[in-house]
Amino acid sequence: MFAGRLLQGGYIGVGSAIVPLYIKEFVPQLNGKYGMFHQLLFVFGVVWAFLLSMILHSILGETESYWRIVFGFAMLVAGWQGCMMHWKYDFETPRYLVSDNRNEEAMELLKMIYKP
Image 1 (cartoon, rainbow, N blue to C red):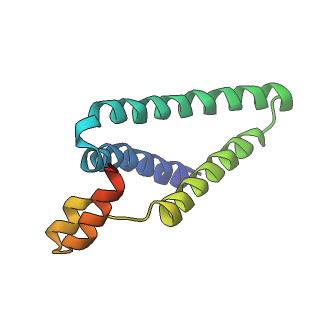
Image 2: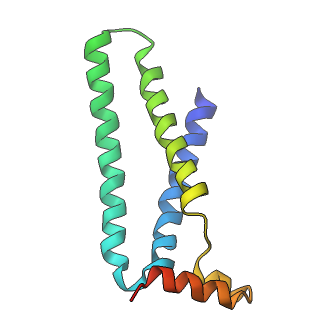
């Protein structure tokens, strides 16, 4: 259990550092708005997890199994996010594509991001 919490905490920390950088790459002119939205959703997730744990604890009582249900919900959300990142939003940033001499792909991506 300690190793799982350590791994989960590491991934949360890395995600908290990487997502704002990714936002800055994609929408530099709206960096503050999207950065605030990311932080707001992060805090909302913490509050939601606390409320879910509190509700399940009041329903199930003093058992040792309710934390597994809360952890299962976290695994479902993480799995959904991973699938969405892999299948729906699987593209590089325009800056990376240009630095890798893939200018045509970068232009297509910029056209997709900044639709006229």
